[in-house]
Picture 1 (cartoon, rainbow over the protein chains, first blue to last red):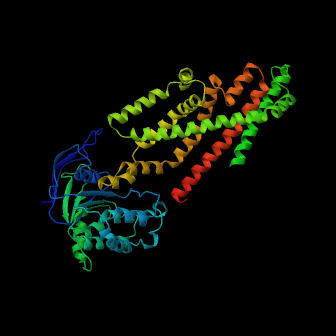
Picture 2: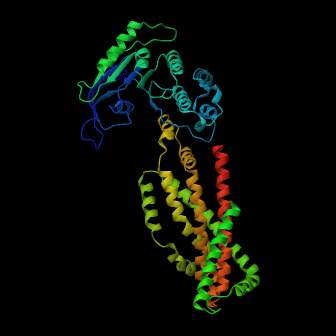
Picture 3: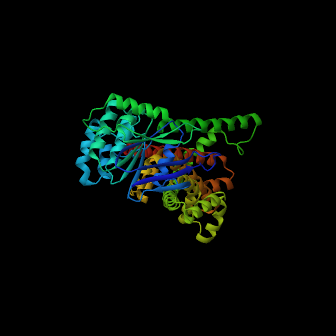
Length: 230
Length: 249
């Protein structure tokens, strides 16, 4: 299994109670997976445990089959001394520049590629940030609310494009949009409200891809399962 | 900006002179203690050229001292930004040494190096060095996580890029600190000259003090004030030009 989390527990250094305990799950196939749940339940902390940014946890995380794990979030900024296009060209390998141009178009960024980062809207900033992460060489990319402030139609187009262009990569998409995770994700780790045991439940998503239809019944069933778990 | 700053200085200076005159005439002080306006005017006409040259001489030393101290502060600040033992050592040393009145070391420098250009330069540089160093250390030690995260996790972070990001993000603060340090450099040079130098406006003030000639001192203060105001405005304009060129705004 490429990613195994076994009995993970984590408590913030000054906190009295653990943020979560006994979280276990595994991802056995590439694709779009999700962490879903209310704010403050530990989605970002678990993501950072997986990438190794948080080390003070108990339990076992196995990522042996991954060489590179990246974590991106929606508060990141690009340096302001040059335009977005110039910055992307610098941080993306020359062999990927064609992919960059395609992604820029799909992500709806063609009109602002020469602007500086701080002149973009928040949605545009998040999309630019995601483009540079997608074109890095990695096995697992965690997208922590990376499409926040992006309209629903564009988000859908972007997620479908990512799934199509990177079929061999693992993604963990942290989102608060239940419809989105139910439709596009393969598996959804639902973080439950305080006091519920177990604290997380894994739900199977509809996992639709580019050009695939979605059965209303299947979507309703998934949504119901997620809401019941939460 | 230049006109406003000079105008502000004129207001403060003439308020001060006005206060002195009120004191002189209300207490009936003699011209020997506080000179009359006509006496001050005569001194201005007589000493204007010599004092202007002396002020420019002091300013020249102060500018070179300030450039030296800013360069040194950046070098040490960049070296000391890391959380290694060396970085911690530099920070602790800087915080402790800046608490010591550097001007008290001036006599040692005069004894060791004499009363020439080099001593004045060293005193000017030392006096404005520590405040600039503390600011640079503070800025360079503080990560800009939302920008640096990407470079760190993708293995692209180099020390040059780190310094560039932190400088860019704190450009306004750095500009203010450097412009403010001009006053410190000028004060340091004047104090140095006042103690033992053989040139500069501080030296002229010392001579005027020995002659108990308040007119000369007031003229010297006027020239110092104008020169610093102009220099600070020039530094601020330079900072604005750099900001505009770098940020595109």
